[in-house]
Length: 486
Image (cartoon, rainbow, N blue to C red; front, side):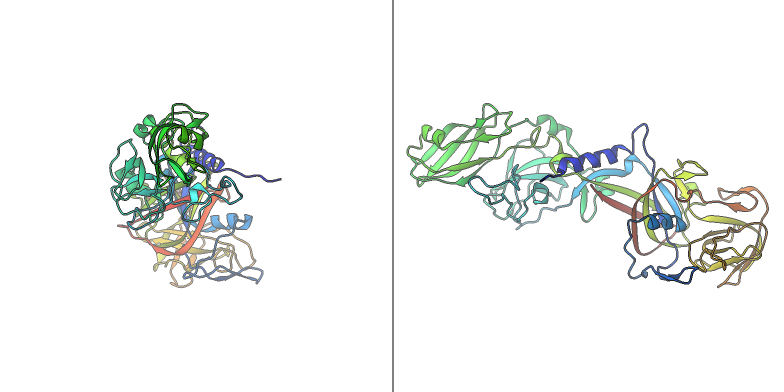
């Protein structure tokens, strides 16, 4: 039983996702960074190994329960994603001279009339949103291609923001849709994608069911030459009319003189062209191009295929307004989009969250080094150092499922506790945990220990990306743009 989920369903999903950032009962999203230590083949407590790739060839994340659980093991920090950090997006297409662009048609993928050949674009696309039917100019204006002058190369860059159809010297016809603001260019313009939004002025000027473009499918023959006016555009709309030019007995041009309104299907009949003066014309076939609901520019997100949502988040150095959460003494290899996670059993709401565990030391000898194994006497606890804050004597660490990284000699993940001494296996540094309950550098310690502000295995992991290590610095900002396709 043939069926299809339409692009409108995809756009609906992108709208629901985007709206969820600002609704009254909205979900809360965070972008997390993790994996401070190198990707490698690791040994499990049962002696088996797990191949986790390498720093030069990061592993492809797997959509599995295991991957979701394990991703929480090494989160270092997370930053809240707000409604201002998301935008509908579409693939970026810069106008480039000499390019043959596709033009807008309402019937890509349908059978060409009179046969079983599928209507396709010049590029070969058989769906509108696979066709190259819009461009961004050097002025960051976005235009829809309404006519490509018989599949000719575009050599004149469109410009201006008029609501009228723009015809350039190369014969192309364009419709101005919207412009990228300075903020959109900064936050939602990447190498491959760009923001899409409806321009209210353009939308208000659009006419539902207007007809502006007619294409010649078959030119016909035997007609009287001349420009034959007031040829009616028939269908379910009204008032549409065109001038049909006949030269050498065949139709050579069709110019819409009254766009009309209300059309969802339309025709220009050979008989009406004859009546208008093209005596004896036969065999002409004209394709009337139907505009999207509301008319061109009424809803740019739907018209241009905005079923992508871009999330733009900056990790700014130490995030100094929330000290203690982000470290600049480490690199990271994983980012993840999290939804509705918890902190201490309640919904997370803070701007930033610390993902690592922390120990406040009462005393120490030597300096711990990042990524080294640490062990605790008596308890047998094992961890991996994320950061050593020597000024505040705070040891940040994670515990994972592997030997020498979280699991102890018995194969269990044992918590660090009490005032038992801690030793770094690479640095030979030692430290004695404090037994005090206090707040140091915005980290709240209870009897010398602080749990992560990201409760493990809460909420949902919506997106995971592994990559080669990114080194952080106090004066550096990592700009992360996620493109989510629906």
